[in-house]
Amino acid sequence: MKKLFLLGLALSTLLLCNCAGSGEKCQGNCKCQNGENCQCSQQCNNGENQVVKAIMERRSIRKYLDKPVEHEKLAQIVKCGINAPSGMNKQPWEIRVVESQELINQVNEVYKKANPDILEKDPSFKNMFRNAPNLICVAGEQNSGLDLGLLGENMMLAAQSLGLGTCCLGGPVHFLTNTEEARFFIEKLGFSEGYSLMYILAVGYPDESPDAKPRDEGKVKFIQ
Image (tube, rainbow, N blue to C red):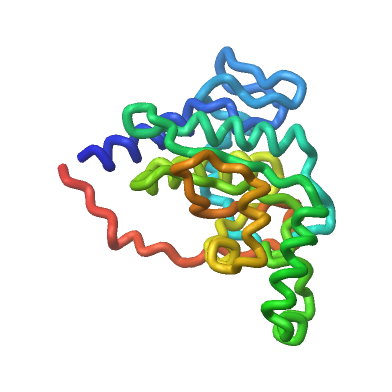
């Protein structure tokens, strides 16, 4: 029951959050100011609900333009993330936003040495993070998986609403935590004691528009 309550609360929070507008007037008494997002849960842009639009259009992006994301947009994404609900409001997460291309390049060299045939397998390879120019690294306390999931979804939807793509990565986490030569990357992130790196969000301007994968609506039942 607790999990269902938290998931319901997460959706309610998203519908009310200020992370899904585009600088146009909303229906009702709400207004989006100078590119800021609507402070309401009503519909913007020709009557289309922007939260629902972001949810339905979000995709996992694995090709990015060679263009770093502006600091202001990254900050807004993270702000939306930490406004996610968490059990007892413990907020059992720590976030590190990697803007340093030098740090990404350094750990990428370690990855290429460990995988010398990577360019043969993937000629488009630029870095081990799906070629994304920026990273959001999320660490959590033990047994914080549900809360970290809510945090991550908020950030992915916020990025979508800002015209950005994301991909939740687990493979690089395994490499970073199990390769001694790559440990410097996690040390540079400087997570507090008791926190472990759980996933990394690749973030960037998308260079692809993949179709939605099929969803099994048969797993949904309404009890009336």
